[in-house]
Image (cartoon, rainbow, N blue to C red):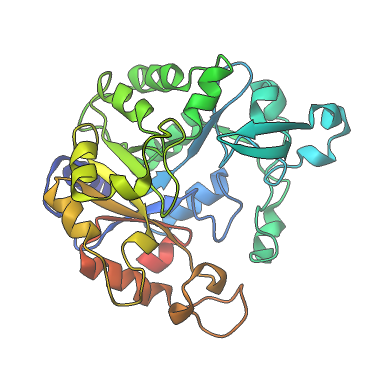
Length: 328
């Protein structure tokens, strides 16, 4: 409960209230358990995460479920299920052509028969011991986990424009869940994320729940071909974001392109009235910049704690982490 109270205060105030950035468990403790599983979320909570993060996609019958992408060939056992072999398809999603199995081609009941598996078995072989043990979770189930533990939750809406074009209005389904569970207020322990702009702008007109605009180091929002993330991270772009969101969530490279030499992004965002979260802090050398690696094994852990300490000193408000315990 103490963690939830501190999180609520942090969401409602413009100045820092914690001695460290909020620790957002990226898909749960995904460095130690298969991502988006109950085991991953439970471990993250035990490790002291302030917030747990579910990525949201949709089933064919319009239920919000928790997977990193709507493509589920690499994170479930669907490829081993002969009854679903004919569902394999090729699709174009936000300009990228992908072949595999997709959540929108399965009912919730069918998805619940699948079992999760480790997405990065070569880098995280220990996680494969948990393959095949857990079902896909719904958004409601992860909300239950967060509420029972007294932690916050940071759902990300994945490809909402794509789903809307299929007749699956993600925003409506999402608002319905928030309304049913009393999470539409500014004090809700929820941070809603999206890489697209329109969905967040429309959500701001419907709920007071805290919103976070995600930005990457390249490209732009799928729903705004006229806009780039580079433009969105200028002082004017940040002021535009502040008209509908209270946070930005940025690639770490936009904050620290060179070890020890930060950009002005955090300062500029704070000046615009935005809090700043950064993604993603991962311990493995494969995900660290060369200066923070230890040895040459891609799966070995590097200097993640030192890296996180630098970002905290820059004024970072929240850190998305695969290994929340290292943030503590």
